[in-house]
Image (cartoon, rainbow, N blue to C red; front, side, top):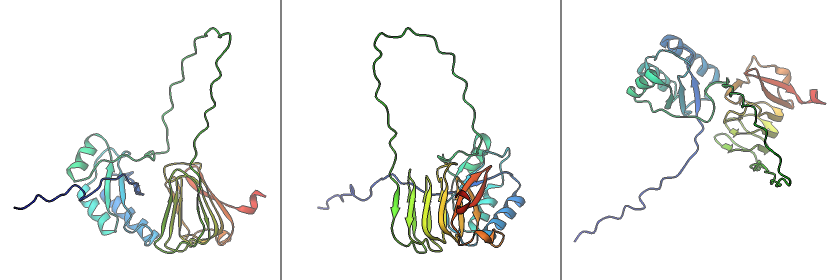
Length: 252
């Protein structure tokens, strides 16, 4: 007699966090999109190669040629895992095999203002008001790494700052939802404010990075970069949707 195979432990479902590159489409013109993708990948070299991609189509009014766009992205080693879209554009994306996703980072920097609250109705004061406990926000402790990070290594500090005491080598990647501090040469990629925190900053005692990003705004450290800041102590901030680089001695 053949017993039925026990498949209870064949797999386990677990939650997971995935860092994805969000590509915001400002046009549905296929030729313009293909040219922009090719140019960006040429500028970035291998930095974005094989990064998971979410296409943000919330800014366009007409669906692009999804099939041709996906083929071009795949040819540039950018695997698409989902799309952000609405209405008929979302319908066409679904037909092309794309899966709708929701990201924690807002699709754009603009925020809809809340309606002002109605004027409060005066209430009689109690003779002895009850004391309310003061709520202390629960903050995640900073993630501290005390070692050198080599090519291919990736560190992610979820809901906290990241502090690296040591070198971040080329090809290494450090990511934090908060600030990033590197006490040593920063030669790889550093991505702060990964979930959209525009107030996040990057601090390093030795700037020589491949790429820096805050809240989705990135900057390549290439030949066009201010060479006076290379290998110097630098603070990186986000201002008007552009990264600002400040020599650390300017704050003294």
